[in-house]
Length: 282
Image (cartoon, rainbow, N blue to C red; front, side, top):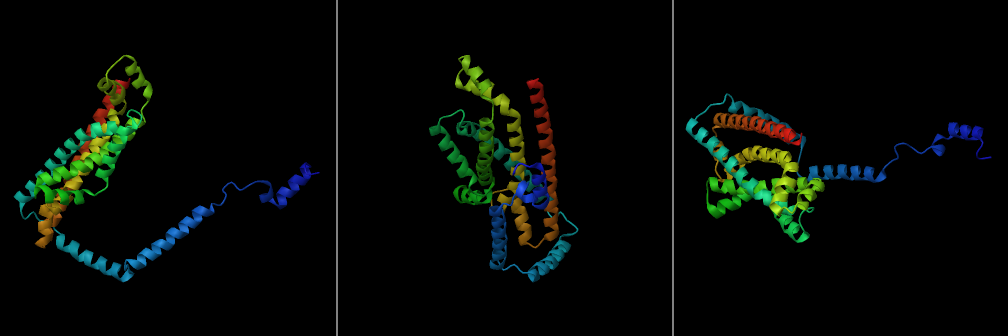
């Protein structure tokens, strides 16, 4: 009989695969996808004229370039300080403007609070702000308002709305609606519902988003300056054009120091607000 324990045990010893299925069955679709990806990598490498000889020559040229950068020298201290100060101002102003705009945009994009005819335009605006790199947006604003810090502020503000608006909307969609319904049950107006039912649940996360965007704008403010949107990027580009590579190294080290100082400040702000949020919850 098929149910005889002795026969089942003997069959398991001779043909184990026929008795129990494999714990990790083969996924042939995944394997085909990896093979296709590997084939495309090889094809793309051949199309882009990537060769080992060029790579080795590039390493040698890179070593000579780094040798020309060392030791760093601050050739124009006034220009360096002015560029760093302007980059810091651009980052702070752009972050502040982007946060102020992101608050209502992210709220309107939350599908658990707003009807579809409100969320779709808000999410379309967020997607449009996220579609282009800040350097591309900075070029457009340089053409519109001219060279200077204003173009950089507007470009980074657009990038801030795209990033913070999306994360803020996603955070609102993950909240518990029980607190929102409790505030609504008291007959409170919409702004009170947002202030007492929504914001307490997302305030700590929103603080993290805002501080991260400030850190990101500090980095991006150095890039938009290369296209004429103000900041230390213009000083860096001018030093490259003069082949003043030791001054380039000094500028790069200054940028690294500014980013690290911004990271320390952002970590402190996050810790303060997160601790305050825990105390409020208790």
